[in-house]
Amino acid sequence: MIFDSYEAYKQASFKPKVCLLGSGPAGTTIARKLGAAGIPVVVLEAGSREFSDESQDFYRGATVGDDYFDLDITRLRFMGGSSNHWAGWCRVLDSQDFEPKAWAPDTGWPISRADIEPYLPEVRDILELPDFRPDVPISDDIRWVQLIKSGAVRFGEKFADELDRSKNIAVVLNTYATELAGDGRRVTGAKLWSNGEGAGTITADYFITCTGGLENSKLLLWSNQRSNGGVVPNAAALGRYWMEHPTFEGGNAILTNYSEFEVDASNEAFFSPTPAAMERLQILNFGIRLIEMPYPNVKRLIADLACTAPTMAEWMSDQLSQRLRCAAQLYVAWEQAPLASNQIELSKTDVDHAGVPRVELHWKKSPLERRTLLEGLRLFGTTMAQKNLGRVRIADWIGNGGDYPTNEETAGHHHMGGTRMGTDVLKSVVDANCKVHGMDNLYVGGSSVFCTSGQCNPTTTITALACRLGDHLSKVITV
Amino acid sequence: MCAVQERHAYRVRIERRVMSNFIKKISRRTIMQALIALPALSLFRNQPAVSDPNGIDPDEIVEVNGWILRRSDLA
Ligand SMILES: Cc1cc2nc3c(=O)[nH]c(=O)nc-3n(C[C@H](O)[C@H](O)[C@H](O)COP(=O)(O)OP(=O)(O)OC[C@H]3O[C@@H](n4cnc5c(N)ncnc54)[C@H](O)[C@@H]3O)c2cc1C
Image 1 (cartoon, chains in turn red, brown):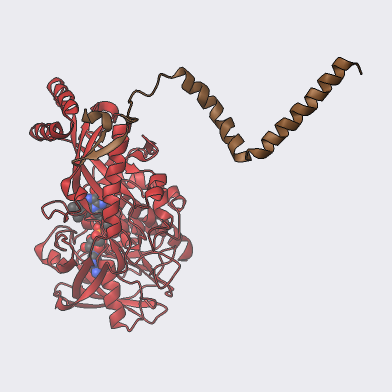
Image 2 (cartoon, protein in one colour):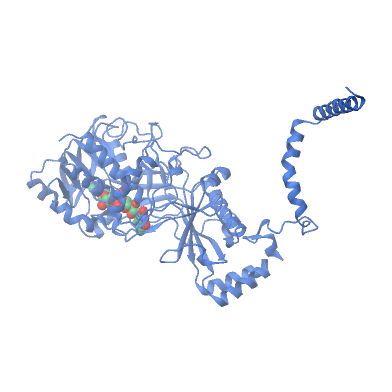
């Protein structure tokens, strides 16, 4: 069932066992799992079926530190969430992303990749993905990795009919959960805002917050403040260890034979360091995206090479006259070090229309990441030269230790951490089952539970974790 | 035992003593290194002499002006 307002929902006398907040990839996936298990679940969605400026305005916020996107640009607030404009690039976090890295503090998850692998066939169905293929090492240091460019499932569109037909799922649109109330053991209800005014409180046996990688932290921080610690009793890490995937143009490559790598439909291929190389150099995970280069830029690259290695440049211009595809731009994205100081706070000066403080995001890239960027490109360049697959030029600002460019992509719109998973209550918010430490009935879905970010896009892992949480709750909850 | 057999036995005893003194003098580590080097030595015998008289490896990876190159690219 889908209701367009909380008023309409109330008239239906639906008795939910679970109240789930947010209808993005995480919320929709968990709701479908619970519904299929016969558990009545109400999904409260702050936005409506379509984009609106009024709804989106609730997502405004401020950033302190490094350059970042405006917070109302980097996510969407309507049915289906940010899946309404995601690019559909899919990959699961690597096994080593779940393992602690001795050289990077606060890394490691309380679960391993094997814990989510059983859900990958389901994830492939949901996201409409082809088979996952294992990484292919091209040297001891570099692996050629798969990043699937899928058709970008819009969760709102794909599942609207199914949700509407469901007897166990009630999706309630235009209904903003402004805060949860709790007594330090249980969430007792969620306060609502609908049609421009307060709409009372909803109760249920279980609550799951799936409001996105910035909003989960905000909702819990605000709820905790209002209930004197009654919603997240162990709040030391709440809002902290927030992560993104910084993304920049890292250089260029000349390829001796472009067809060495099986490029995808848009002539792109992806590479990462091997776990052994990361350990040897004590760097984080790193992704290189090789993009075919426009012809005029290739000529400029050859001229640059001619100053350093004339024979090589001559060979290259020969190649260029025979075939146009022989050079590439290298885009890089990397794993951020999880830092407690990268955090979401509640604004002290700015509130939304419902009176809830807006997000203030504190975010900075770290020196370890800077080293990861340089060493990651060096590894790739060295492999290319040693194997005679091509030659790499590292962008000047990276080699010279210059500032990050301000006119580039900046990051991936991937909002991770803030309610991270763990066993230490001082450094995490939820346990291995995504249950908030110390609370009996409060769970979190989405990438805010990520302990580390890896180098790849998060939604495939979000969906796998959502399937896992849905399965877990289907066993825990008795109807 | 005839005189010839006696001389042979004596030589064997002497040789054994000389060998064991030799083995005692050089360290186990040196012997291991020699053993490891043996196959490589035979390999080197079949190889032409190192091409660069200055001992510069043309395949060495160097970083020049941001480019990651083989030394031979710089020719
Ligand atoms: C431009 C762009 C491109 C992207 N490309 C990729 C990509 O290629 N690959 C990839 O893996 N990821 C990509 N992402 C990230 C991806 O969109 C997110 O990881 C994913 O949508 C997160 O799912 P979610 O369900 O956790 O949160 P969201 O999608 O953010 O959904 C949260 C939902 O909760 C609702 N909500 C919020 N607050 C409340 C509240 N208090 N009460 C009730 N409802 C609430 C919102 O309206 C929204 O519908 C991209 C993101 C952007 C912005």
